[in-house]
Length: 233
Image (cartoon, rainbow, N blue to C red):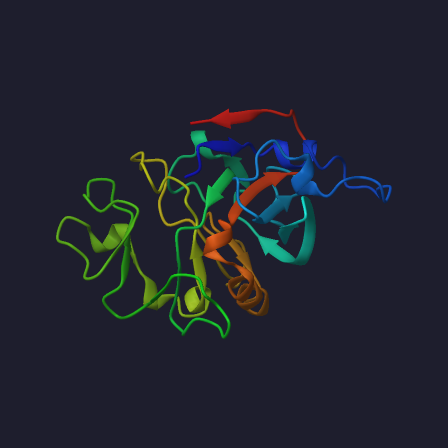
């Protein structure tokens, strides 16, 4: 997880209300308090904290200016968004904040042109969400004895959603038990997520072909209104 997190309210307290804008208004990343220090950024913005849908946009920093590369409709947790620092596991909420993207994975091969670190999902691949396990919020292969199957995801069982995905650094580098595990940017399923951010399959492929680990991409998740506050871990 990056050292500073943009709260649910920051993105579009920085973005402003959902109305037409003058052409002179700087792009969203230039109005954010923190973009992670890299030269690539994904923003995932919802209309409000209770929303389960919104938009993911990806940006490049070129000659000191953020340039929009592409965008796609997004889905969030069934119960909307909540501040990452206060999130509780199993609440089906998407954590707001600014996060790094440690690596990609998928049931299928990495898309052509992708240079992002990529792990291929097999039948022994699990994501441990057991608060009592040593490998909490980690990929495990095979599943260790202290990580109960009922508290873990066998990744291959989600062939559609995890055809291709990016690990989101929420609660990842220094996990806090009970805050949540297994937050990804992945392909859409049938509806809202359990806390991840999802996009159509074609958009996921474009994101993975675009993302360059040398440019340190981050994902910023937030809403379109609220007080401008920055939460720091």
